[in-house]
Image 1 (cartoon, rainbow, N blue to C red):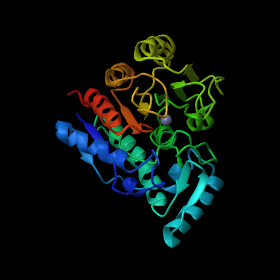
Image 2 (image 1 turned 120 degrees about the vertical axis):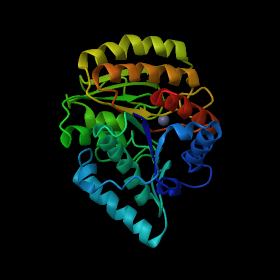
Image 3 (image 1 turned 45 degrees about the horizontal axis):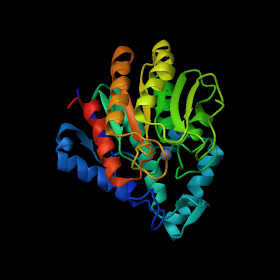
Length: 312
Ligand SMILES: [Zn+2]
């Protein structure tokens, strides 16, 4: 058994302009670090993630939203130019291909794990997805990759219970919007509060375990909160598969948030989740990159996460 690493060169080409933190160099930093550390040889590298299909995406988004986004992004692809959904979320000619590959990687990773080809998988993709709601583009996100994959596992593969874990520094409001009330899913997250998108303090459903934490919370405190708040609910829920919204912007070197995590904390969290998956879910985990903008810290944190997933 092994760990698959899904990506696609088109995920790199989406570009929101000079100085934007959600930049192509994020993927370069991860790739370079995996090569420099030799961790790449321990992974089942799949740089050919297929594009998601529109029916797959419509398991998480409204058909109207998908069609409108497709129309606009295909027009940018064919004629050039940019469109700013908000000051931080900018589409360009390469965005359509990237959003399809990002969601498609998550779907393909789900298929590979459920087929038993690999024990778990990481999707090194961009744009990220967890702020994308059923019908709104926001916060660097277009399609909600993790929600698309979780619904694929439920609706296509027939799983009854899956968990979504979101450890990005920002609240995964988009995933909550899609998943709240879907009792087949338990979503556990922590996030800095208050911080963009300023939601999450009051959960939108009983299947949401939201843990808002103040700025400057450090890893030790977060570990205690995870053991107290997440783990009992996850053990009781007994998910058949885990999906991780793996954002690494809670790292203390990341300037988009003010939390104090370090690589050892990501390693610890991943160990907790891997053990949970091994108890309940045959080890099945699909983890998708969300945030993480301090390039060196991002690369080191992804490596810490991957070393646990791959058992090396
Ligand atoms: Zn984030």
